Amino acid sequence: MILLDGKKTSSDIKDEIAIEVAEIKKQGNKVPHLAAVIVGNDGASLTYVNAKVKACKHVGFESTLVQLSEDISENELLSQIESLNNNDNIDGFIVQLPLPKHIDEQKVIMAVHPDKDVDGFHPTNVGKMALNLPTFISATPFGILELLDRYNVETSGKHVVVIGRSHIVGSPMSILLSQKRKVGNATVTITHSRTKNLKEITLQADIVIAALGIPEFLKADMVKDHVTVIDVGITRVEDATKKSGYRLLGDVAFEEVSTKADFITPVPGGVGPMTIAMLLKNTLLARKRSN
Image (tube, rainbow, N blue to C red):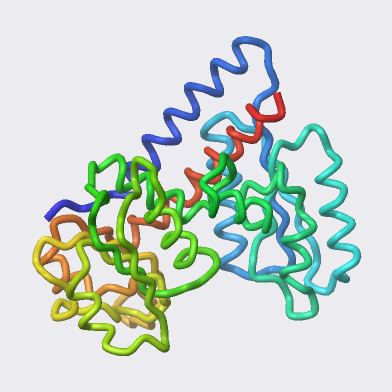
């Protein structure tokens, strides 16, 4: 069994980006600039956004954190987004989700200019992704593709089963892996909460991508030998033995499934660290495009 180490891979990617940014700087050109907008004081969101700011510093990017109050109006937030759209100094920006209930998430996603949408959520970029045109691929699917590529996991002609149909992971993964690309050319089955005989389907899979948000959902009796398993889920579960009071679990029962897998991602340290690395990669791409 080979562990698909997202922590190490993301570190390698950041080092590669840092070398490229140093060269940009050496030539006297403007370095990439990523902005992040966060609304409110959600602890998990703040931690994640701060990690992005720290990663920017590591690779030599400029970064801006726009922190807004929980009770900001939708129009005020849209005005902030328009300001970032029109700021030539900023190459790309993200609006950290989730947003407070009084703000329409879809309206906010639509307001981000596609050329600065380094999250890859705007319908223009999602459409280009579906058509296999050059665009920003959202960070989690992009990170999964990169992990499979760097560990030389064969996808061509393989049967991939995706569990979960979210717009952020499940749906784009099903499209990307079926496309004619280096990490692609697979036959993809997408499954979800209404799928019948799910176990029968996952037992046929050469690659399983679990992205449904239920801790340890995928068990050993649901996969065949020599399977590749990508665990996208991450859930906090109470654990009095831990100093933090909780532990992190993925959607895969790792201990038992790993005995049957050829390749598997751990949680934490698998897909999670890749998302920030790919966000940086998208921001570098935005800078190159604006040139």
